[in-house]
Length: 370
Image (cartoon, rainbow, N blue to C red; front, side):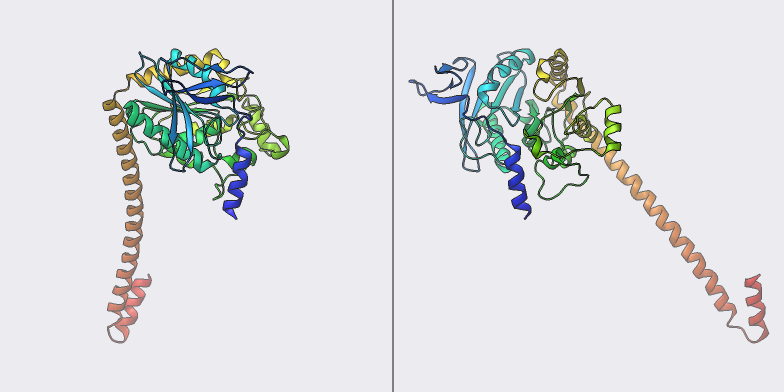
């Protein structure tokens, strides 16, 4: 039953553009190229020197398309997982701007069933997709996790946190309009059910690197569903009043998702709350690129040694906390044992005295009672 509900949730979670906005072709030299299909003419996307068009095999048996954009001045690489209603053809211009402004190499990919990627979109397939992209970065481009930043927008926060939880030496994570979980987008629930999808609420605690959260604050966010009929109200009247007081006007999915993830992060970076922004236009606000640039620059300055030292420090603090809790518990238990031993000793004295004869017994019992 849970599996069936999870499959149903997946159908509501993914909206790949139809038809795809680009196609992949092989040039005369044998190199893959991407051409736009948005118009009647096939217009090449990008140029041969800055863009690699890749076709990657996933462990699910699908072939997915990835765009790798090179920046000769880059020190870090950004792995971008996009939202649910876009494909690489629509995102290429944004990738070019991010590559230049952030001074990074950037790789973006289409999930199974999106763009020119084969297969059908599902939660498990997106996990296989991002793992294939990471493997490609390691084997083809020599990118280590220490030099990698994962970026997840909307639904893309799911595969992003899936991979981030597995990479202890990752340089950083960016969560853009991210979700706590799939079910929490459509219903106000406090518990995680087995059939829920993208359980980011559980995975964020496993991420050891700095986490930047970027979220709108004050407008409606279409995180996963595009039909109002498929949504249910997120708040009770009391909760809705409190959220509005905090500056959040969205009754469907709101800033509390981003705030929740930021509060649960082990190493949270200063968040960016864009008041008045929407779900799909935060990139248009000047604060977006300024804050993101500052984050990237600070991540560049964090050496592997400093990062590992920070991880060890967090582990020591956690160990001390656990030790303190254990000691307090042991002390309480020892106190109870001592009290019990005292009672037993008193009772033994009474019994020993009671071993006398006649009036001596009565005298001893009287003495203890007084």
